[in-house]
Amino acid sequence: MMTPARLPVIIRMLERKYGRPKWERRYEPVAELVFTILSQNTTDINAERALESLRKAYPVWEAVAAAPPGGIAAAIRGGGLADAKAGYIKESLKGILTEQGNLSFDFLREMSDAQAIDYLTKFKGVGIKTASCVLLFALGRPAMPVDTHVFRVARRLDFLGGGGRGAAHRILGAITPPEDVYSFHVNLVRHGRQVCKARTPLCDECVVEPLCPSSRSGVPCIRLKG
Ligand code: SF4
Image 1 (cartoon, rainbow, N blue to C red):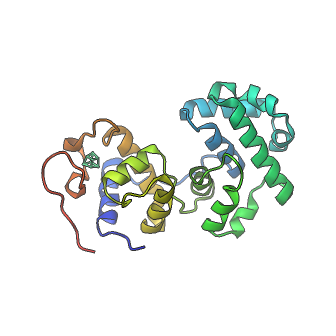
Image 2 (spheres, protein in one colour):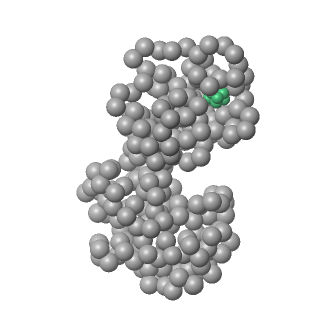
């Protein structure tokens, strides 16, 4: 899939506004997986609290894999959907431990990005966004997680061609230069939170407005060739 000519220009425009974020590991891979499951349908702050509480109750991950789901659910209760998330966490950790013999996630380093995503998403409750978060945030690999902000802004910028969330991971991952995936992801989230808001996008304040076909400003979008 070709990179549209507008895309690198938009990445640079967003970096001028928000900066080019430097990649730093958020959590080690197993903690990133658990954190991302915990963050489903809740805020990052609630997920962080639930993760902390889980770590207090079970200081090593092997203990989480062996724990009764009810014990995990009790530890993460503050994060919402505790029973379902407890099952997802336990089954994915238990499955990886059984298959790989440890929870270091070193095996992912031997896999391509696509293989790693396929492997992780076979566990119930681990979707493509969660798998992409593990790759991007814990391993620094160019997998593009598509959350609600990334999806909305990318769709308004007309990079998704009418595809849904599942397709968005594949499309954005394919058209974004690997070295820009982290920056583009982080800045799309910032832009979605601050400017390209869900109900009322602030198009008059938007740095990429000249290149956005969905702008409400009434000024025609500049179409770049290529
Ligand atoms: S011009 Fe408007 S719709 Fe387009 S990215 Fe900016 S805020 Fe969003």
